[in-house]
Length: 265
Ligand code: HPA
Image 1: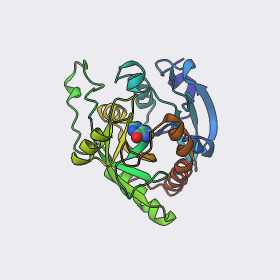
Image 2: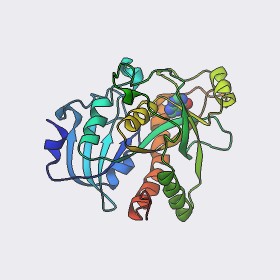
Image 3: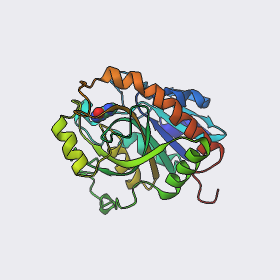
Image 4: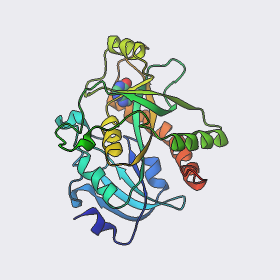
């Protein structure tokens, strides 16, 4: 089924993509309808544990939203454009701005697990690009202001109101699925990264290509490789993500309750 037919008269302009273990936000939505990705043309069949794979259309603190619970990752198939049909469908039903969330490792000693980092910029270290093969000149997307300033200001304002320590920094995209080596993390830091992860960057590129505004937040689930003696694991990501997810959920609820993503709010 096409997304526009599934939605009928429901016309939100805000989208969200939930990272692994960030289900708290899904629970904050007053659902109008929930549709499994399998029923929606072009939506990905996600195979990562901790990712649900359903679209929730509903209201978040009154704001009509489309929430994508579950995403396709580059490491699942090597296709950086796997989210293109879903993001195109969102754009085609009128989504103008999107909030991307993920779990990430921290490269900063003062940004421990459980922290939230708002992404101010990214480094595409995976080197893949979802627009490779796009024939039109629209493929030459400017990435100077990839993460929208108004949306970022709104998130910071809400964080201040809630007394949440909202870190800001550069997210470096590694393809995964392996975690990084300690040497790679030393390199990431030297190159200006504050957090590392395996998602989001292709979605940011696609959303900007489609003309949507983007904000993105990482839930820090661990110190990156080599920063402590510990080995990293997906089990840890899944265990810690809900803790930070609660904080991120409060933050986003406040942002929508006070319409802080709008320029004139
Ligand atoms: N590296 C990459 N991706 C991640 C990490 C990490 O340390 N933690 C959660 N996602």
